[in-house]
Amino acid sequence: MTNDRKILLGYLEGSLSDPDVERLEKRLSTDKRLREELEQLRSISVTLASARADGFSAFFAERTLKVLWSRAADQAVPLYDALRWVFLRTAVAGLALVILLGVLNVIDYQGLDMASSWIEAAFGLPSTTVEDAFTYGLI
Amino acid sequence: MSDAIRPTDEELLAGARAGDQRALRQIIERYEGKVAATVVGMLGAGPDAEDVGQETFIRFYRAIDKFRGESSLATYLTRIAINQSLKALKKRRKWHERFLSRDDESLSFSEPGESGEKAIEAVDRQRIVHEALQRLNPDHRAVAVLRFMEGHSTRETAVILGIPEGTVMSRLSRATDKLGDLLRPVLGAQSENSETQP
Image 1 (cartoon, each protein chain N blue to C red):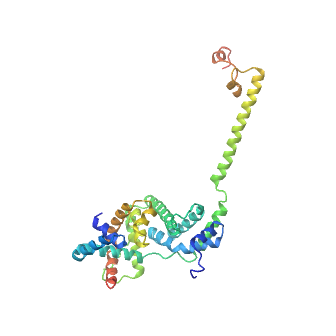
Image 2: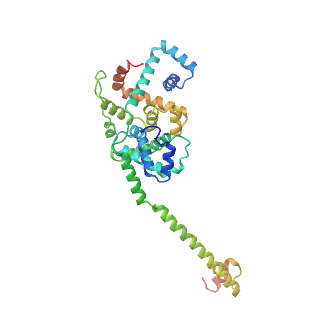
Image 3: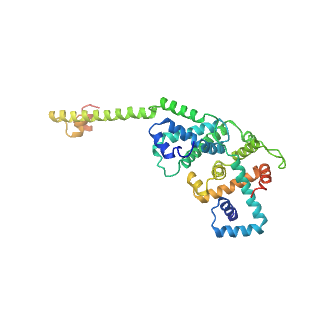
């Protein structure tokens, strides 16, 4: 973008400082090309402003509110939220059940002295090595 | 309605937040013109524009508690309207790419065909302006609509679009270059009319 264009846009917007305005107006009085460019920008600005839409068709507010309330009724609980609610609770309940079973296993196995570690006890694993398992045909 | 009994935006917002439908309706009626100017400028007149206008107010209402009043309600709604319009334009472009060839797309702009000397009716002028806007890149169009059509300052335009002021100026410059060519017949008529004005 040329600096002139930036200055002209600022001039039309009214955002130039007083000394800048004075400098530009001095140039405009002698520079025909700059005057034409300003006129072009001003015409574009005026033309666009005059083509501004004032509103939508009649009863827009009523139609918008109707759509809003019908969507609110249809999506009182959006599907994603509903599924998240169900899955979150199922996951928490499942995890709690696994922990509970593990604790019960630990209590049972330790009482029977059948596990060599609490991990074996928690998962209900037989107290054996892989070598023993092969030897005794467990796997 | 006189200003003395006209509720302020803050009062209407408080009412709408509390579930007062009349307050929400008044907000829509008060800002319909503002949203329409943005959306129609971005998309052109038609059912698409009205849908996006409705979506703007629906999104605003759904997030009404998030509006903290850091900007004016008009600016806030304009930002939503611009974002929704850009989203609709993306959808429209995908549709065009899928179902229309580039040749078909270029035919959607009907050339004015009239000479600059002939008076152009207001309706025609409006149509030509909107068709010319449709020919701009959406980013450049957004700047032209906000800055020229709605009269926002460069700074406000930058805030609404979330871009630096320098970018607003450079996009505006490119937009005016193209609009200068596209609107030549209308600009001729316009400058003839404005010669009498200061």
